[in-house]
Image (tube, rainbow, N blue to C red; front, side, top):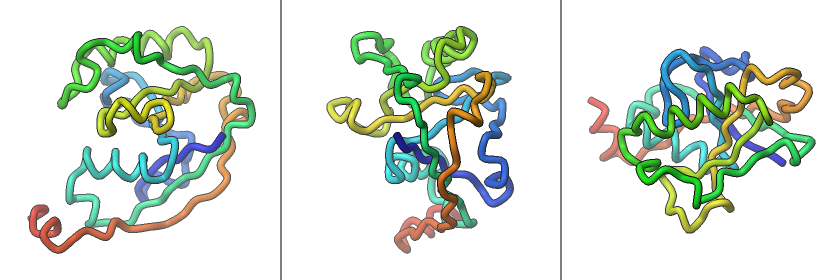
Amino acid sequence: MRCYRIMSASYYKSPYGSSSNAGRWNPRGTRMIYAGSAPTVALLEYLCIKGPAVGSKPWFMIEYEIKDESLVGTLEVSSLPSDWALVPHGKTTQNFGKTWLDAREFPFLKVPSARINIRFYPMEFNLLINPDFPGLTDLLKVIDTVPFTYTLNPWMEKLKK
């Protein structure tokens, strides 16, 4: 199974690294890696979060491979908190993610993207990766690192000013 992550030029040389900034599925102070099921999912997520500022610098798409798909959990739609897709995100999903990280049952978890209609889940998804899972670098291999820039329409370029 392949998954994809976007990293800036400052951090892409540490593909297993993560910050402890808050995200939809983790509270501040808790490390988590976010990836997408396809390059387009990762691109869309980053664009929606960062806005037109993404056009101002180079990026890298990290392509990973998970050899053993039995290590990938799936969050069922019926288990989603009712407010899971709020923008901005709430504490419910962060608490869920922290509980998942702390349990260390498996290193990877499929979750729906708040940017994509739920009908497309689990075909398109975000993948949560526990950076502190024992032996992660043996379970998740970097296959490729591809430099790219976002090509924004001219009207979007004006928004970042």
